[in-house]
Image (cartoon, rainbow, N blue to C red):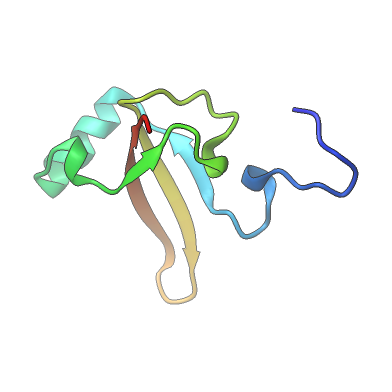
Length: 83
């Protein structure tokens, strides 16, 4: 993606945690672990700036890895939806 001078892409910013698409098998494990349906997870729009360039599509599940001073790392999951 082309950027203007001094413009930082949101996914590359130091304060944006790591976002990644997980496989369908991993998604099923997450749903089983938390005993929920995909739509019961927090939602993220397909055009969210934090996931630009990942090639996400509605129905994908995103794993967000956040750094935590107390836990070291914490994992969050979001379900991708259209607007």
